Length: 296
Image (cartoon, rainbow, N blue to C red):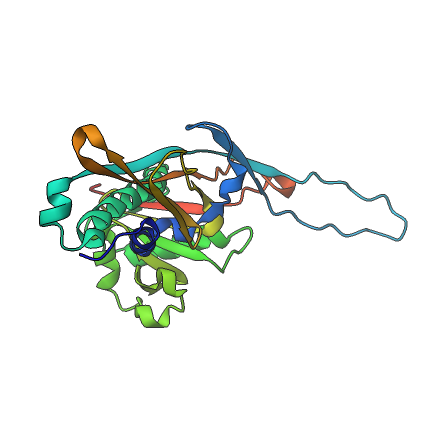
């Protein structure tokens, strides 16, 4: 077994984390620096609502002043971690590849839990459209979702359709789904994309409730991530960041257990951008639409 360093193992963890985290890369990400304080603290993100310009009726006529409306979004960070005691026996006699046998498992656990914070926000959203149990009207439902997103203020770029595995089967059986190679997505996200459908980049996530899908603009949800600080007294540690997703890897020998403590952790949280904020003339701007099959 090769000599281990925290930085080397953390780099492996980041590569794995990048492949694990699908949904957070499709939504608005909040810089970690906006969070401060203890575990569980909440930050309020203000998302501006689009507005409409007016026309002066005649030269010199009195003009109308409009408010600039913002939607407050509260996101709470949770400390997500996986800790493992690696005994002297394991380290000396059993382990062949630390990164594969230990870090891969730990990172997958942290990545899944971090993504679940966003999946939970999506799952908790109220459903807007219903799809037949056999998916026979899935194309009409996706087209209606597309119309809802673009009705008042078209947001044609950065539109995603996140689908559960069951919903993905419906789309894969249609002729409208283009191949992933034609999706034109960044390489960090490409592995998770199953294609393009009716103007949406389609990503699949097992974290979504079975038989559901979410059509949304990237501003429809907010995801926050911050790397924990390195505690004083640890033997070895590393902090890595890739594409806005960060994690911390620490090692510390536990003498009363004759074991190394390996801990991978991150702070993460997510929230849906509400639609109760309005723009000019009371217009509501839809940023996300939830689709549910009739038997879900």
